Image (tube, rainbow, N blue to C red; front, side, top):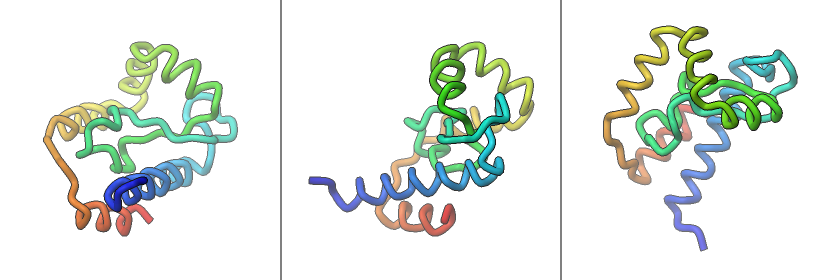
Length: 113
């Protein structure tokens, strides 16, 4: 059974993904096709950037699986060329330790929604 905190994390993840796709008009940032997912630029393991809209790109399934996950070094170089300083800022922000409380997650959900 999921804890209240895990339910809030799941909700925040879903809202983040939807917001990222909407931010790109539901188009894949790589090929321009219909986006079906959102890809974290900095790993979602870093809670300080996990729900940051700037830490996501909208992607179609083939680009997500075969490019962004299939060729992570190449895709990160592409992202750095495409976004420049945004990537450097995310890298710095992701290094800050953040362990969200239930209150933090409720605020994140409100901000992302």
